[in-house]
Length: 376
Image (cartoon, rainbow, N blue to C red; front, side, top):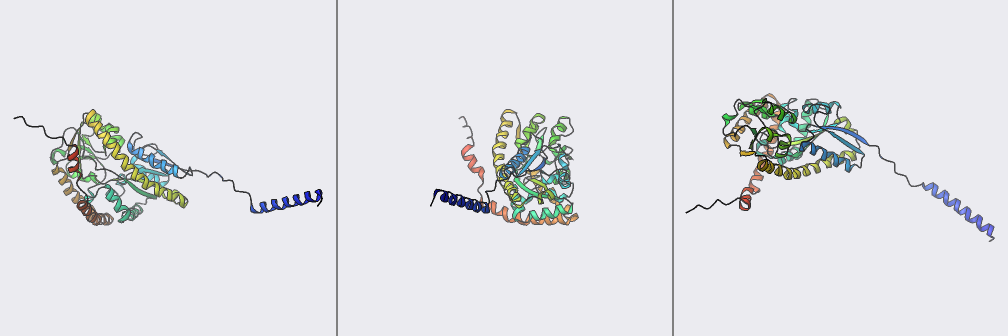
């Protein structure tokens, strides 16, 4: 074969090869995904650890979606007041938000059953178990439909038992609550009112200014870190620990339902898993931070902590039962939720009490200081 013929054969083969490659198509060049941005607002001041929890959730979603979904979190009051979150998200003024179900108490008293009250002996993690596996999620969806809320709700983040509150002097008996101008929320409004207090429901950011001006004599909010950051030690040096008024509360992440439904399935799945990851991480962070701030207030800010007397705790249970009976008679859905919680609690609390060892014995064994020896 002449050199000219060889060259023609090579060029012909190259052309055929090019045609074959062309028929297969060139590798696709990945196009950058468009970013969907959701504007969230929390119901907490920017300095509160609760706002930090909101940011923690947003970061998990933002990281896991690789920027395809971006949640921007604003503090309480940036767009609407804290208690206006549900309406703002439902109407689409906000794409979502971070708060607690009990803040919507004014819409329907049954909403306070997600955290306001003794929960029949359940702690917050047990109430979350009821929400996910015991029918609570479906009942909350039903409840939101009755109030016309166009939202997708995620309940997460178990809270520790909240203090009875901050007072000018130790509370030693039920009568000490009578006439006190006291801040609380949810069904606790009814409970403390029945116990004689003059109750005022205020969002977190407004409590300390009200106490400083004498508009409140006492108040409760939530935990050592939040209470310290909000400034409770600046207006009170007495904190009463342990209470049944909110010993099983959780947080809530809200999305506008239309905005949420428009998301592709993979992003909804990311949100599902980010909520559960955030719930676990929040509870771990709470153990670390709350204990540090508890010690800080006790040792450096001269706060005196007292256990709430059993007589007050027992009276809370008696009064709560009266409030629940009244509201159940007025509201069939309230009763349905209460009955569901009670049935779940009877099973899981019995299991918990029978199974888990009391940690007080171990703590005293390792850390309790021995009593000083008596001099002869």
